[in-house]
Length: 109
Image (cartoon, rainbow, N blue to C red):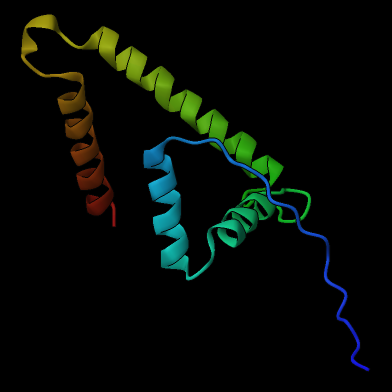
């Protein structure tokens, strides 16, 4: 007499996506060496912050948001201060300030 191995009950589910999205899912599952179902399940279950904590702590997240706000305020101030006839775009001005900052940092070493 052979014993039957108890397997968890699995049922087929459907996923609605465009043909292009389906092709991307198939391609990425193949790259990962997994069946489509296993690949999708692994991705969905791995994105659970209760099981897998976020990389940044709550304090680090708040600091990051505050830094982004500071950069935004700087960009707005810079946009207001740029002379209209200078021919320097906002991106150009930021690049110039970045280069000046790098040079100043190298000189202080």
